[in-house]
Length: 393
Image 1 (spheres, one colour):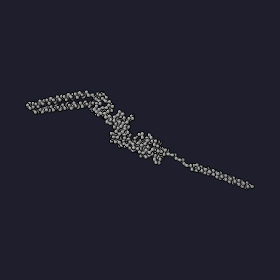
Image 2 (cartoon, one colour):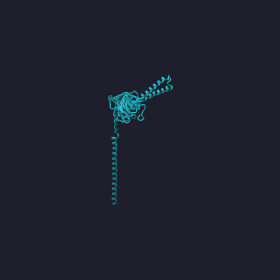
Image 3 (spheres, one colour):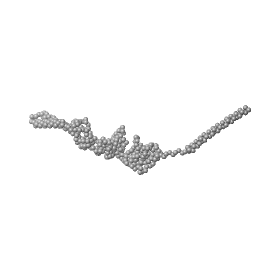
Image 4 (cartoon, helix red, strand yellow):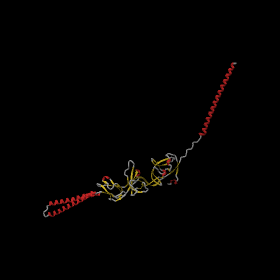
C-alpha cells in the first residue's frame, strides 16, 4: 500500500517536470520566432524604404554672365601723378657785399624782364667811395698831363743842348708813371661802380616771380640765400612718377594731358626729359612734362597726368569685370571645365568705353562680366554669354 502511494507521487512529479520543460522550450521558441520576425521586418523595411532609394540630385552650378572681349586697337596711355614745379627755377640773391634793403620793387606773380631790378640796397657809403675814387682819377690825369707837358718842353730844348738825353729819359719815365696811375685810378673807380651795381638785385632772365623773401629795412648779405625765386619764361612742369616698365614705353616729345588737383581744367604738355636713373628703393623714375604758363599751374601743387604712348592692340573690359585686392587688379574667367580661373592683369586707360587690359589676358577668355566678388578660383559655374545690349556703358 505504501509502495503504491510513493510510486504515485513520483509519477506526478515526473509528469510535472516534463510539462514545465516543455513549456519553457515553447516559450523560447516563441521568443526566438518573434525576434527573428522583427529582424526580418527591419531588414525588409531597410531594403524597401532605404536600400533602393536613389541619392538626391546635386544642385545645378550657379550661372554667371561672361563676355569674350577680343582685341581692340586703342590709344595706349599711361596714368601717373606728380608735383608741379617751375621748369627752370632761378634763385636770386645777393651778389655783392650786401647791406640794408632800401626798396623792394616786385611782388610774387610779377612778370620781369632780363636784368630788371627786383630790390635796391642802400649805398650811400659806397657812393661816397666812388666819388673819392673819381677825384683820384682826375688828380692822376692832371699829373699825367703835367708830366707830358714837361716832357714836350724838354724835347724842344734837347736839340739846343740845354737838356741832356738822360733828362729826357727821366721825364719820359715820369710821364709813363703818371699815365699808369691814371689807369689804376680808373680801374679802382670801375670796381667801385661795379660793386654799387651789384647792390641792385636783378633778375638774371625774363620770367615770373614766384617767391619774395625780403622786406625794406632788412640787412642782407650772401649768407641769406635766395631772396627771390623766378620761373624762367614762366614755364612750368609736372614731374610724373612712373614705374620702370612704363618709363621704358615713353620717349621725349610724347604728349600728355595734365589736370591739377582741385580743378577740372586740363592742360596739354610734352615730355622734355626722361629720368636717366631708376630709384633702387621705389623702382620708379621721373618723366618731366613741360607746360606753358597758366595761373592754375601753381608750383608745389599736385596733378594727374595721362601720357599718350602710341597705340596698342589689347582687350578692353567693362569696369564691372575688373576687380582688385592687395595683390593688384584681376579678372575671373570660366575655363572649359566650368571652373572659375583668376587672371592677374595690368590695366591701362580708363574711359567710357571700358578699361584697357595691357597684360594678363589674350582676349579669347570667357571673362565674368559681374558678380566676380562673390566667386572664388575653382568654383563651378555655368557660363552664360552676355547679350550685346548688356555691354552698353
